[in-house]
Length: 189
Image (cartoon, rainbow, N blue to C red; front, side):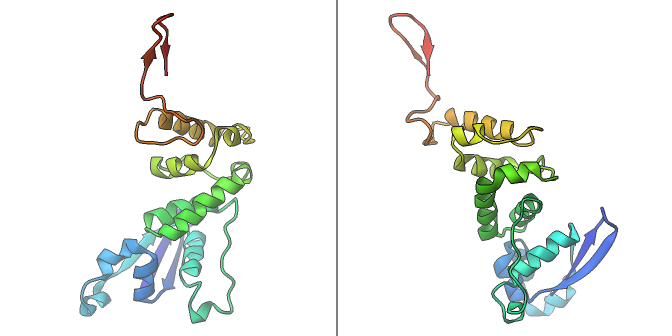
């Protein structure tokens, strides 16, 4: 299958080739479009609007266990590319890569917030998954001078305190219930 990648920001276009079965198994986003009968595959034109370098990284990752990748090194996550890869891999439904990126974010958040990347594109689902890995003390220890992500992590932690379904590792109970002291009449969580 040929995938046409259009990078409007850099005014670049590049074509990538990937076997259909590999594309479906690694990028589940394409499964619904490519699971039809073989005669119609030629009619399918895949165009992706994405950073060319990020999509190149993703294709190398997809092909990491194939014969043609024996000579190539498996691409590595870095503080400067992990956010773009996380967002793209979630969109393309690359679940194992999303999990790797989330784990990488937890271990390397200080380096990530220091890198020149836009973290406003991280959706609520990804933010929750990242925040769940952090303790309050770990968030407090983040060195995020421009507050690119630290306050979002704290906000998510506070939201989780009020979720009655969530078991918080930072506190034994949650804040979903209010109690009134029978002696002083103060409200307590």
